[in-house]
Length: 312
Image (cartoon, rainbow, N blue to C red):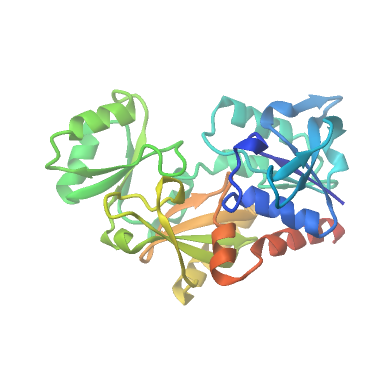
């Protein structure tokens, strides 16, 4: 059985952090052949999707990977394709999902579904589950943000295409930089952003829950530094062991039918207190931190599940 990972250039990935590497290593450990490519390596010919990919072997000593010669492949040769290109979801990303639409689902499982990836902007998709969200607006208009801040003295502004905490600001009605922050974030009221009521519980941590086919596998608490509102690990948040609560399991169960129907099999839910804040679908991370803190092997679980979909 062969697995393909569509990723950013592998040399940019971070050992002991990137979930893509954990999944590749788990597939390798289960005896499967592992390949990798970038979105630029995908193509369509004779109506089917193919790629120029390299066989890859993960190893413990530097460098952490060894690549074989690049080869021209049809994606139907693969049992499973993991689409794990990091945001932003730009034109290149969007076009890649159209190319992946040409993969025959009877031959190859694509995780996550190309159609699901197009449907599920990681900020906007959460609006499908509004009952679990804090108060939120999406707008490009400064006056809408000002009105929101009249009702909620503090709010968090998020770009709709950001990742890893990039471009996130804590807004306050008293901040003399408020107008400038809105101008920069909305590119002078031409690009919509998301504004959520600030949750004080965020100081205790933002929980990332890894969900597979609607079932929670585990979670990690990402605690922000004292001088930062963001808990994202890429910007200095601290990973702390945690458990998935009964309430969070109920939350996952409520979301599961929609996630599975949209082909969003491997996702990361972000939860602060009792509120859902984001649904991460492009390249959700957190598995390595969860495994390190809890002694689990979540990547093995994911690969076993993916292989079973093809064997079944």
